[in-house]
Length: 369
Image (cartoon, rainbow, N blue to C red; front, side, top):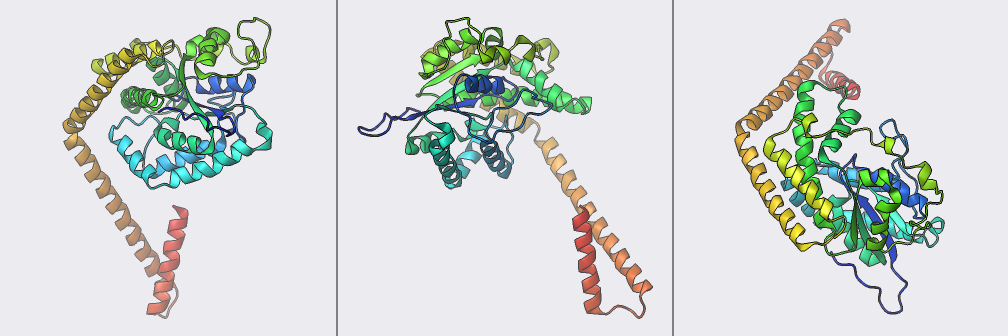
């Protein structure tokens, strides 16, 4: 994904840092740090919440944009299905995502509040639409640069459990742990591939919390960023009040995660290989190894789908049956209500009146639902 050089006589390309990575990987901490180092986050931002009280540093429009299109395709943020890639590609080919992003990004690049600041956009969903971001950025004169936050998959899964599954049943949590590890592997592989060929950098969350200056020094060099701090200086900076080791609430290991051995080993290997890219973002041997793992993942996923075919078919059949039963119950209840109305309001209701009553009853029931 090479970055196009500026045309002779044209304005210099605006650096646009796209912060991605699996959710709960430290993307918010990374984007918040860059904001305090002088980069501009398009407004308005997503508000802080109980799951992230320090703030997300995500443009609200971008979050809504990605989630809306993923929802239309019934996709999840770290969707483990290899087929999801083709679903997104087909949707992108229709042109609507690019048109929407073009309109928004053009406005952001021209916004007076940005001034001449570099732009940082953070969203863990962004890797699904990497092609759209690249094409639109080139059209509008933005120099897209990928910055990926890395966190050990066992910690990511544990953090997601704490944030989203604490009130769920043990059975569901067991299922989601395996699904989340698979989703982490898939998302990590796709995110890495999204930034190939262009300016990109990787940073471990644990390194950012331990010493943000040392962690961001290679990022600054690899992404060619201008920061309003001398990273070689120990003088106090606003980031010192924002980043602290206590932000790493989940420190789990593989001993704390229940998942198949082969998936655990695959996730660990991906984690180790991505660590190599923190120092050499385009190491050819590492990229070849990641491609090999990606092919292996797709093959194993296909095997899993085939193995669970009967289960999936039975679940779909039962779901359809429940939907039909619910529909029959609704119709029967409407008939009982109509009969009660007829009995309470003699003489008998005529055909037109009955139809009107039935329509009103349907509207009431739909509204309640």
